Length: 140
Image: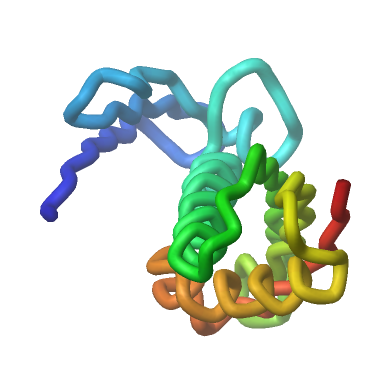
């Protein structure tokens, strides 16, 4: 599979503005310095990475559970992406994933084992190997 997205930035860093969109049209949004570094109503690259990571992880965990014969009722994941300033510039240095699963037939320890496997093997986690990824599991 090959997927496409586009972004354009107009103007200077602080006074300029940008627009990002995906090929499917599911995302078509403005972004700005303010939305990235100060908070605002527009999107920013970090929340897009978080959304992609949470979605990928949830699917990878559901797939692993299903392949092992444990069909999940639900897997819900949130991602907190940390953008920090260091001496050499800005960097995403940490992502905290928190997942909650409702999976009949297994216990919390088994769920955590499957979740750790999904953390290591989901394609977005693999793409983010330079970032610390922490995982917290909750089991229903």
